[in-house]
Length: 313
Image 1: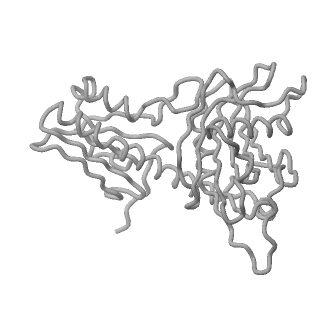
Image 2: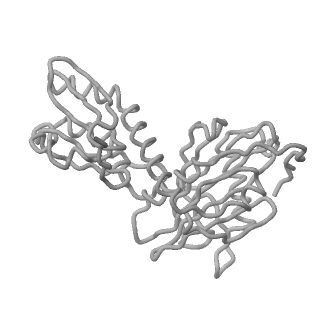
Image 3: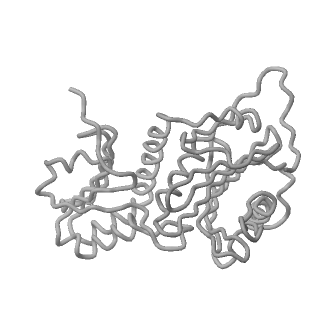
């Protein structure tokens, strides 16, 4: 018999835990790890939305949730990850210990695996939803020799030789996706952060302008960006999260920038998402952009095809 489809909003986690533990130190540690502020947002928004339930009702529809964390007391500390037990897709994490301290230690020890596994599966889930109605990325394939799974509600705002700006409007603002390339030689001596900021600010000055005062988008200096190493389509990349602003303007918001090293073609492909949504939360909008960018795949060059030119844009 096939399992039912799991339920739950993107980035939501059901926590099965006794009220006493939830309202004490164990709950505090869980919230610290699972509801930590998302890097790069001006206002604090939690990594995951937590919903607490008593163990007494775990045999109801609660167990159909896509992400479940079960906290309990046991003779020995344990961390166990079970997939697709009651529904598909599903992650259930069992965390136990003999007392509060053992449970807390187990959470602390395995929190990177816990948060990383949930984030990864939520990215996959979002990409599956996007794949049902995709934007035609043929021009992106032709310009950059890559493919990106972009939702159909995005459209081109600007298209140049080696630059693409796609945008999705919503009632309270918009989401944007930038794709461009620069030669490997564009990165000079100095920190990765300084290089990425210099390049993205030059792109903002050239292409991303305010409507009234002709100001351009730049990296906001008062918020130092977060940067980390990652991989996109098995290529080395840097992820940067920070805040953008329009010069001499009140418009600003979060951005997510990926610099992907494409050594065979002696270039960096840079894919960036940024959000303008002043009257509402931004976590899920940035997460959608993250899932889009992480779908990037490099196409194999066709036979007898000339190598991609690496001119500065």
